[in-house]
Image 1: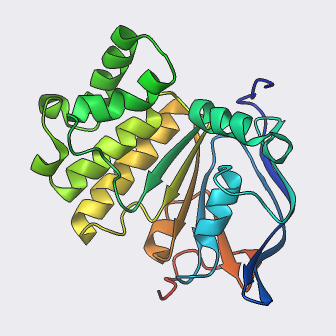
Image 2: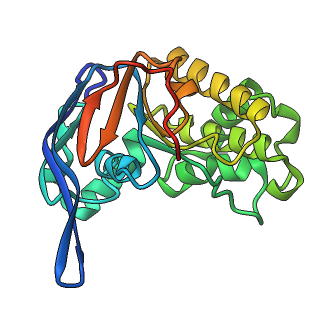
Length: 239
């Protein structure tokens, strides 16, 4: 598998996704073209069911398009087989979801280091990097705690640390504050933006919350299968 370059843009060309529903076919995304410069914070706005999450899954190689291509760091994901797409995701993409997806039987530290351990990385270096990140997200004293002893905001901070541990080229966040109250969500959002900018990473976030868009470098709207540049990023989109 070729190496990905941090200096290369993310490029989508003619990206379409169709789902078979019985005897009919539903088009969720149609001929999407997009170039995202390295280090940008991009928000995808749209109503629930508009295709925001589908677009994130295609960009991240979780799903494959019906047609078109996705290139990250100069590597065309759509040209990779399933095994190499999985390896690319593991090495170059961090995911943060609305639900934290922490393993309840593992400690905070073990949850953060688990992806790196599965990739065969040395445990001492992983633990050192994980403890550093836990300190930066304000959870240095909770490393040995189980997730069920944490608040929702704290659990999402653990998920952020886990996503950033391997210093990915790209962070994909799908409604990362959607399960949190407004105050906690704002704190988590601030933390996520600050950390990704410190690392110089590209952040693409799907949300229906227009207030988040005011913080972005670029705002795009997913509407009727098309991707449009948003003219009023601070305008909320109803769920």
